[in-house]
Image (cartoon, rainbow, N blue to C red; front, side, top):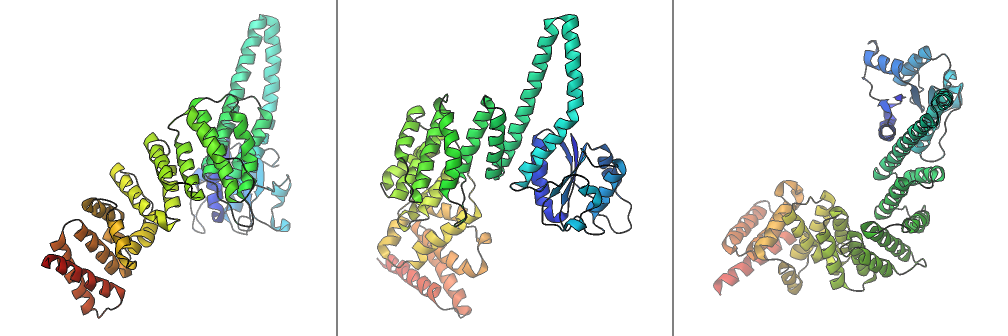
Length: 476
């Protein structure tokens, strides 16, 4: 159907999410509005969109029903087209709005007041409108089918059945795609509710079972909870039964993915102190189905780190996860998340960053900032223990260490107040790379600039100390 969405700019993000979901169901949406100055004529393209639409969705909010709003102007055009809004106009309350401020025209139909996910409930309401609109047509088709059977025999009836089945499959596919869009956009709970509703209507559809399982696994991988409002267990309880049922006819990679995520579910429960199964048992089963399964290896590595059962074994699992070539971003997220959460594992994060540099993988600004503050700045500037610093410098060959640092931290990305420390750290790595003369010259320049600025403190002391160490090595 052609759908026009009228809204206040305050709810533009909600409107865009709704548009994506409607597009996924095969509808065509008009949502853009020309920003008009007072006194200008209403945009002709917008008038045409309202004249051509099948359904007019009005997002009710105090802003959209305020006197003089563009949304009310759009509603007026809709009212000119349809004297009664029934079956054509869908008012959706997206924010508490005094009833007496809502136009009488909108109150002539039932206001949709979502109790959960606004997008999901609006999609369901649109689907009901579409079904009502198609009912006379379906009755006509049924009558024609009867006549065809009488006139032409069973062949016509079979054709009709096939046509209806094809239409049903197309409808199911659109609804699955819509729920999948919600899931991939991060609206996991709303997507899951939609999948549960579809499951009740199409319990034997294999494509639906697969898409539902994929969404459940994604939700577990991207799980986020607000302390005091929700727990891992709340989500696991919703998703776990679907993953188990998906194992009935799953084989190979699909079965391995499901087993791995069941292990991850148990790991999440264990983190909250809940009674759960052994995550490792699920990971082992997954690897029997697919020896290089990315999720089994990466999740097992994270579980080992969290339970402190074996750093070396965890690193081996992560290496195999990376080698699998699947979902590299998820693997990297676990590697950084685990290593940057424990002091003993922080140097490992440098090895991961170097691998990413060599593979041409992007690294987020958030990870760069954590690597700078928790690793490079700490190990090469803040910590004075010579043994710790020496071990850190020995992680990689000197020239490789320097190349990784330069890739992570170009000077243009460093805050002005951190540049002296950044220069000091880089000069230490430069010396470690065998470029002692260049490093010493840089240290002298840095010290001269700091002195000219009458700076003091740790950066001056560290620069003098490193310069002194450099001269002592030359004297030998």
